[in-house]
Length: 434
Image (cartoon, rainbow, N blue to C red; front, side, top):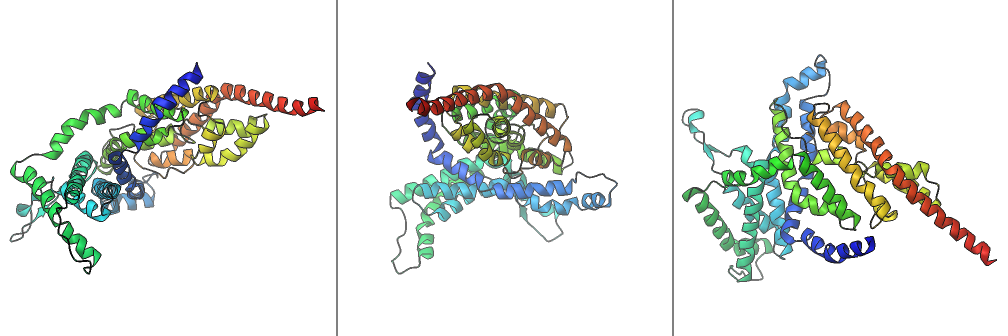
């Protein structure tokens, strides 16, 4: 029965899911957002520095708090305006997928996105005789992410259409490549600027309000416990059949996760209560401890309690990577893929982790996450940083690790005993032959 179900999923589901994960527009969105991670990770650490997890009476705390506005400027120029960078990456990736010039696609995507924003005239607020317009920075952050995705794709598709139809200025081969490309892009640039500019400034269409109306229910729902459990289940379920669940689910959920995280960081920087529980760092540090499936518990059991030679050897090999959240050696070495015994705790353990961590965070027992710490940090350290230096996050992480050991234990024992029996048969077979 299980074999037929596994074969059905492998034949009917694996192919479509893989195609979905590799669909060029989704891949471009994923690549563009992932390209911003260094800015998000480094930028978010300035939030910790400006809001130090130290006693307020300490001199260093008073100094950092007094200079918080300056300390937060690198954050405001990086993570706070993440969509500005993500759009550039999306345009570059999508253009390259069509064998077009990546830089040209990135620039077209950027101007298309910026043309959805109406600068604010601040002449009245400036000194007499000085005029000027400013771009609202909030439109450049996560609030504009979905507008940026749509306009980046639109701009590159216009670029592709005009290139395919040959609607471009061809320069002689003797002209330098950069100059030639600039002239080739005159027509698509003109079309993109006229189209987006007319829609925004002449028709008066408010891209950002319209998109916010569409996605606000999605963003709100994604922070609920039901959505968290669904995301965890789908990720682990796909992994059980050899499909990279994190890649598929993450590609779809990451834009929303970034919005949730940026809303938290903005609130923290303004000294307000953070509104969201489940941005992506919540999954990384309280659910995927040791990797997808919360396999740190299984790695510990294999390394210290296994009796079979194979499980013991795999445990010694896989424990160190698991501490740093790399669990492919376990997923494909045990294997967990298509393994009816280990699939159950692989799905159940992270779901229970999610419920406990969500309840603890909602109850205020642990700070809400505000920092996107590097994913290869050991779980407790990453949890401490993600929660803004909250030591209670370390305690919660250790509790969840211990819980994963308990959940995996009975299934691990069945699996280990079956391996031990197989090894015993293999040893007996040569003796019988003699």
